Image (cartoon, rainbow, N blue to C red; front, top):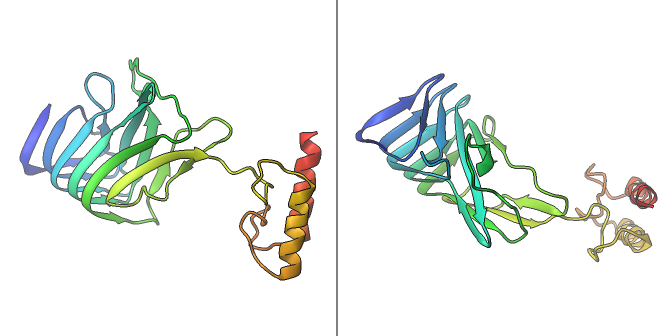
Length: 212
């Protein structure tokens, strides 16, 4: 346990802090690493009394684990969290010597931090997430918030414009309807070019043919 609650701690290039810790301020500089794991090779907690800043080029590793239907994650508490660098969210098995597991399932939710103020610089912030099995996707809509929540949801099926769980002729007709009505729909924009037109119909045909 590292208790340094009255001073500012800087993690410089090649430096690493891990295990339980309580700090007043923490600056993760270029090349530095805050590894939010415990000394028992599991998820951990980083308690910051005031300010934590992840600078561009710095690294913060956070971990996810499950135990049956229960979910656990590394967690940061602070007044202000500045995210500008590399935020790596990993399965707990990435911790050397860990025996616990991360078994993803749709509906799981993980709270990674609770702070009063969250500031981000999207020009330098890089977030990496664990790869999920087919049919699952990450919902990050609530991640970059004072209470940062990461969820696992059902992944949308590419080409399933009418959202019936299938890709077939009815999806082609749905795209045609959007074209005729001059409307844009994200699901109908199958090739993600910002338009709904004949190329999206061809994309759906390709999906159907390749699935046969």
